[in-house]
Every structure is written in structure tokens, then in C-alpha cells.
Image 1 (tube, rainbow, N blue to C red):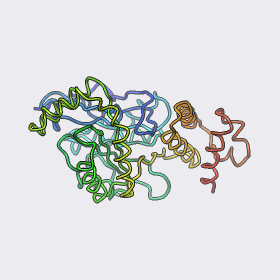
Image 2 (image 1 turned 90 degrees about the vertical axis):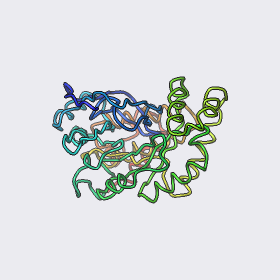
Image 3 (image 1 turned 45 degrees about the horizontal axis):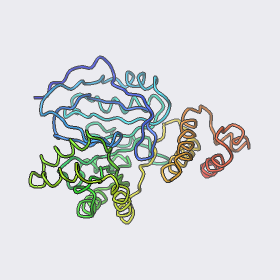
Length: 337
């Protein structure tokens, strides 16, 4: 049995987080807790498999977008992610309230596994310019493809959507898994696919083995040996590249679009998005770190950088050197009216 308890306030966790190269400034949990189906879920931010209890308590956040907006206002500027949908969203409306609160606080928002009842009404999403919301649907152990009805619900509202899964050796790392999974995602309307290297921690190994045994008992023993007695971490980069190549062949982007705040200047959004993409594609860790720092600076900048660029003053205001300034200015020029 699932017990829904009223949380004392919004559950928002601040921190510099990452979704396959896209910056996230905070996570919001509409319903906090790990109870109810599925028995295991994949967290694409921490890249781990999370076990869930069949019964237990969930802390339900407020239904007031204003409460969520006030909580987000205490965190660093930048896009946020809303997650933790409950099965009673149609009655409670808390997931929708959290996402509306994110927009009201001046942020773009990623929606993690959004339920249809937690989506805005038809016509709420703008049809021109960058999206304010981006939906990410995650794989759960035992699934062979995303839920087409869930993807259809976001498509009808004009919200870009895609899928994410962990590349697990001997399970989800080969074409036998990812080709039909990607084909099903594309057929359902996905625009991007995120094959993610899992966290190589003892906790990940343990829960991966438990999850595999729960959905495929015949493979449990061999999978246990693979996870605990082989250097599988060395195989992951190549497996991720193979999955990305398969996604690219189907026209699926390797990155989600960056959601834009409702009042965000288009140049700021485009420059931050461009620098995120450059960081995600860089093999130089120092350069990637500088690009990510530049994105944080743009997110926290209250000025219209496009206007500063048109005045010829961007390189004076931008504190990350001429090379990164040129990359940002090329994006600002593209966004110019």
C-alpha cells in the first residue's frame, strides 16, 4: 500500500548537476520517496539504478506553483529538473504545480518521466523559439521500449521529448537491445536519445544485479559474474559510442534541447546551449570545465547578451577569454533579430 503524506514544503535539491552535458541547477521532487512500481528505476542525473519498495510512504509537495517558485528562487540560476510523479497526479496536480513554479521562477525545465496528467493543457507550450519544457523518459529494467502513449501526450503539447538509458554490460550495451529500443523511441516521436555510462560504484553493481535477477532470472548468475568479475568499465566508452552512432543513424540527437526560461533573451539561451554542446563534445577536461563555467556565468547574467554583442562590448564583459568569447559570439550573432 502506498501512503501519501503531505510534505512540509517543496522538496528542492540545489547543486551543479548534469544531464548528459546539459546543466541543471536544481532537482525538484513532486512526490519524494521510493515506493510503488516499478521495482527499480534509472536515475539519469546520478546514473544509478534505484530500488523501490512495493509499499511505503511518499511525501507529496504543495499544489501551489507559487510555493515551488519561491523554493526555486533560493537556488542558482539555470534550468531545473522536475521528477517524482505520483500515480495520483490527476487528483493531486503536484507535478504540474512544480513545473509551473519552475517557469514562474524564470527557468526552463526538464520533465523527468512526466505523467500525462502532469502536463500543461493544449496550446500552453510555445510553438516558436526554444522550448520552455523538455521531457525525458527513462528506461526501467525489463522494458524494451518507451511508453508510446506517454511520448504521444507530450508530442501533442509541442514539448520535445527523448529517452535515456544506462549502457550496462551484458544487458543494455549491445545492438540486440538498443536498436529495437531506439526504433521504438523514434516511432513514438522521440527527438533525442541519451545512452549513458553508468556510475561504476559498488552500489550500482549491487542494484543492477538485483534488477536483472528480478526481470530475467535465467541470466542472473552470468550477469553477476560479468558485473563483479570482469573489467566492464573499460568497455563502456566504446559501447556508448556504438549506441550514439545507432541513434544518430535514426536521426536522434545525442543531447536534449536546452529549455529556455519564458523571459530569457534568445541570445543568452543560444550562447549557453552552444557552449554546453561544445563542453559535451570536448575531450579536453580543462576546456570542458571552462565552458561549463561560462554557461553558469551566462545563466546568472541578468543582462541581454545579444544587445551587448551588437554594441561590440561582449568580449569586454565576458570573463573567459577570447577563444570562448568567439564561440559564444557566433551563437549570439545567429540569434540577432
